[in-house]
Length: 463
Image 1 (tube, rainbow, N blue to C red):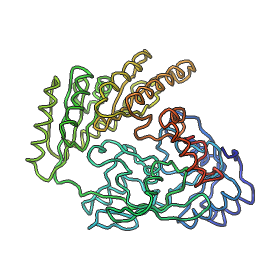
Image 2 (cartoon, rainbow, N blue to C red; image 1 turned 135 degrees about the vertical axis):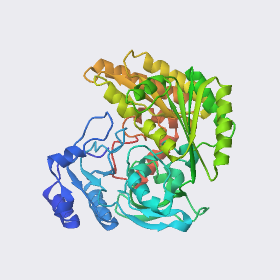
Image 3 (tube, one colour; image 1 turned 60 degrees about the vertical axis):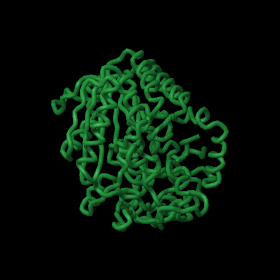
């Protein structure tokens, strides 16, 4: 890894101020501390300086200079990552895209939009709604588009619309040496050349820095539906997931919450869930009749798997209530267990193996014997997020939690799954890269060395 840079030289600071303007360069302790950590449990690392570029030319100039001077550069979006993806472990420069947050052009007839990387996806969707359009990937937090591309963010709507990688047509990328390239095309299909667009998606800013993206949009559906199904056992609930997906049902979202999560959500007074393993579903359609048909089949499959209750409601209000509940789960758990900290695990397996994954992860977190051990997951795509509890001031407790997390990752890998379904590698999943990828990890290293021979881009990540 490139040498850590705790402080920039006067020459470097003068260059940055001349390139960006003094107001777009900060070395204050407050700004450096803010950009020293994300929302993960990983340790903070102070950068030497923060820069706020306003256009691609400035990003190019900064990277060209940093590459020649061997100064680390870490891109920063909203700081919502939870695997340490944006922590500047080698110090140097943090490039905050706060001021590159524009919608550049909407191609309404093609369901596409050009955007800058600092734009936050919820803010973008609020503006696009006026034209009846939305960007589908929904990671929960109001993440930046650049961060979503860097981590290949996914979330609740993946079964219906795919992850970020399925919703990006083209990118403008600045390479480590300052060169600007374009990847992809606005055409819906192409067989031309290597697929560089998808190489950069999920690379966590280690290969290049995104300065513009063309995204796939979808029309806001005319009709929504929401359904909540509860089950007596985890096995019943997870088997129902496999049954629904295996039967060809196409829910836009299919989420799992365990009894502990359901019980804690009920403490808010806003919800009245059965405190049992529960599935949350969403369907979209142009007609109410089509939605009712999908719901009827989903209900039948749930009942075949010992469903205790199946509540359905068609309409936007019910749908919004459902996802408000799902997205608030982690905050509610943290609030209800003030003496407990959580490692958020992110594993995924084939949907047919989801029952085995959930059962194994439940055993691991319950063996810790701490309150708050719970699980939620994007069940429709085999993704699970166990909340692994530990005592924050107890090194032994933290070590046990980390060991449990490692065991859960190894189970996912043994089932043909992955160490990270959507949170990215960051710092937390580096120990599992060799087991998951084998010899192909060396190919990844070669790609990294090709694009970033001095190792200045987000050093300390992936490898």
